Amino acid sequence: MANPKDSHGCIHRFNAVLKAMTQHRNSLSDRNIAALPFVASRQEIVRDADLSGFFLLVGARSKTFMIQGDLRVAGKRQTIRIKVGEVGKITAREARAKAKALLGSIADGIDPRPKAKPGASVPSNSNDPTLREAWGRYRDGHMKRKNRSEGTIENYRDHVERLMSDWLDEPLSRFGEDPALVVVRHEKITKEHGSYIANGCMRTLRAIYNHARKAARALPADNPVSAVDWNAESRRDTALGLSDLPGWFAELAALDNAMRREFHLFLLFSGHRPDAIKKARIEHLDFKNRVLHIPKPKGGETKAFDIPLSRPMIRCLVRAIRIGRTFYPDQASEWLFPADSKSGHLAEHKEKRSDLSKWGNELRQTFRTIAQAAGVPELDVHLLMNHSIPGVNAGYITRNALLRDHLRSQQESISRKILEAARADRKGKSSPRGTWPLVGGRDFLSKILDLTGRRP
Image (cartoon, rainbow, N blue to C red; front, side, top):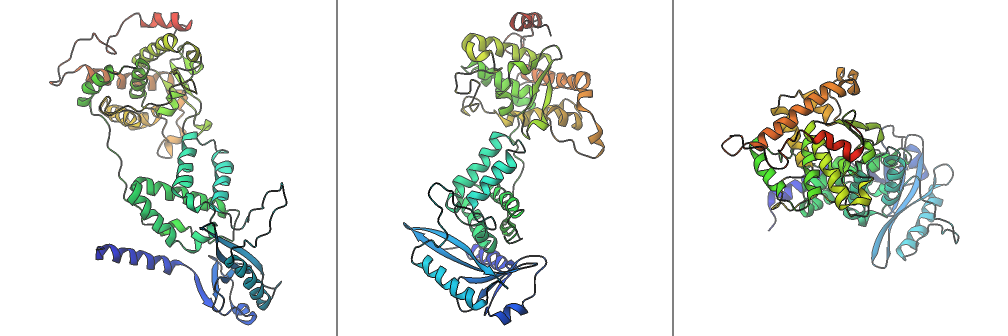
């Protein structure tokens, strides 16, 4: 039996959606249409009181006769919306007769829209694109032009082409006019996939709709996602504390794949995103200036930056280079973390939780947590992690001016704090320095010269 409180909540949200929709019924005659005022803030739909599916779209400067019907082909339903004519160019009687013919064809399973000639593409309705068309334009005209990362584009694609696949050929106007559909879909995704994915999917739809409406001004002005009651989200607290590091290092040392060991360790030392480090190239490593250049991080080429390298980070990269040249000689000439993969670099960084309890972005959160414990100021942490700098005055700070000395010194402090914690046993006592990666080794810098031909 349904929970009465849940039912009451659904009814309340649905009524709120209906209240927000600007549409009503009227007998669409020339006299009644002439008496209807233009609207300034949002388009208004006036449905005909006599012919279902026939309506008038009233905007700031125009009034347009429209029809909408559901075409069923092979058991699948597709909503079709067609412009009948502009008020002033066609009378209400002529528009109703044309609307009856169009709606009759749709009811018979016939698509009345004009067919393209062989070899020609079917022109889309620029005033009312389908979700598929709007997604394609947003992806190619906005995301790729703004140099969004492949991971970000793939995330949006998953939302549209998997979670909203049955909507791909629906016109966006259907959701603008009936936002209750979006509310129901958000609740469905929440139940089946979780609250975070449901919210993310709705953000994707909101962005696509807003982008489409820049060109398709006939779409309802109110974004249908505004009707959604968002799921509560909280920052995920998955970082390691200082007392957790000895156990994590023991797990890391037990991994069979030496290259993956160094990769996870470098993520912890640097605090950066896995995808950016996976794609790091040998040519991006500058031992002389002790930096690793990241040319295309999240946010695109305009966010390019240099990671200052502490001495433990350099040791880590030296070991990775040696391992790569031993096991992946062909790929190692190009990639810092090579692998026997299609791309030539490490492609998958996830581990079984029973083997390694924390990896990926959890190590990024750990870096930030340990930076605070090491006494590194918040602004320096933002700069080291390539975050946007908060505050107006911070915009005048030149990152490169701080890179050589100040930020590298802060990076050394964080790496030192990590290793000190890793050396401590459960009672807080320091353990001997004798095993990977705690052994210092004073000759590690000379080994760089042997590996790269360049002295740091």
